[in-house]
Amino acid sequence: MPLVLVDLLSYTGTKGGMETYARELYRAIGGMRRDFEFIAFASSEGARLDMSWFPGEVIDSGISGENRFAWARGELMAVGRAAKAHGADLVHAPASLGPRKTTMPTVLTIHDMLYWSHPEYMSTPLYTGPVKWMEKVAARNAERVITISPASADEIQKYLSVPSDRLDVIPLAGPPPRATPRRPVPEGRPLIIAMGNRRPHKNWEALIHAVALIDEPRRPRIVITGGRGEDPLAPLVQRLGVTADVELRGWVDDEEVARLYATAAALAIPSRAEGFSLPTLEAMAQGIPVLLSDIRVHRYVGGEAALYFSPDDHAGLAELMTRVSGDPDIQAGMSEAGRARAGEFTWVRSASATLQSFDRALGRQSPAV
Image 1 (cartoon, rainbow, N blue to C red):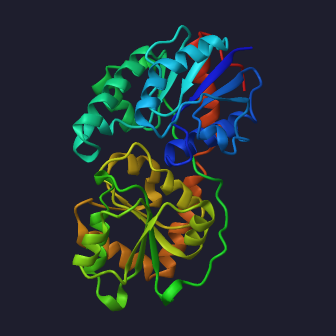
Image 2 (image 1 turned 90 degrees about the vertical axis):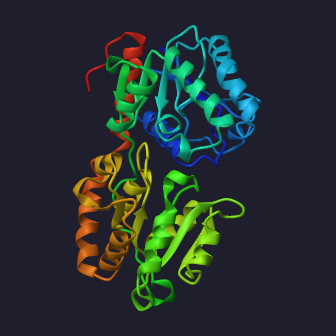
Image 3 (image 1 turned 180 degrees about the vertical axis):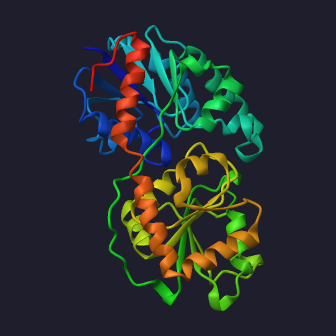
């Protein structure tokens, strides 16, 4: 039975969507085929977390996933050594970066190519350059590359020269569609939520500008989660005079997210670029209307169940927020369509396709389902 070492050096409990991917994927894998065994090579932070979702032994690497230098050195060198030492037949690196060289096949999941396609939105050149090099060497070593949308697949071929016959497009998923008990709206006015880090490609400024364009009597309340420390959006909120309308929160736990969903009239995502959009599926699964910037990956995820606006069209976003938050019939229709759309993306399907990718990397046939 093949043994798969899963590279979880970047899993620290603070990384958002990539950690959701690893956690939900392996939770689903654990309930499926029994013809693989798994061990996790975890960061020192991750090994201290609740890892009951992982379908195998969790090994504490002793490497900090929060220390960039220790983590990078571990990705490049320690993962391959650990795989060899434990007799692994395959390595899966689920967080876009992985080992430089392995003696066994590696499957690498690359979530997006933003460091290549939109370097201006990411970090400083001193950080972006090494990350791009690490992505390149990891992709070169990989027997197969999984990615999460056709848009990302096209960019992986363009920037990393990975041929299409080595690529597997496997979308992410959200929670199963369910009815969310509604709660009274705070302050008696509609709430629109937005969730994500403060990197420039998230384009939160568009959302703040849009709400400032809405007449005060019709203005919804906006909550943007995901900030850390001193929020870079705060000066804009103050300058536009919307401090009473826009609340900037840090990272919130699952319980607080559930409270926000229970009162939200809509979720808004004005991003200029993404690899996927997990918050879209999470919101749709709970019947929350979703307003998305009109970029290719959002169309792939949201389909006909979302409403779209140009990332630079502040007035258009303002009109959508006003129309959706003020019309219960629109909300009801979008809620029904969203649940149906979310149901098309499941972790069981993602897990099944991932195991098939593992089979291809090992040169063996997948069993009949």
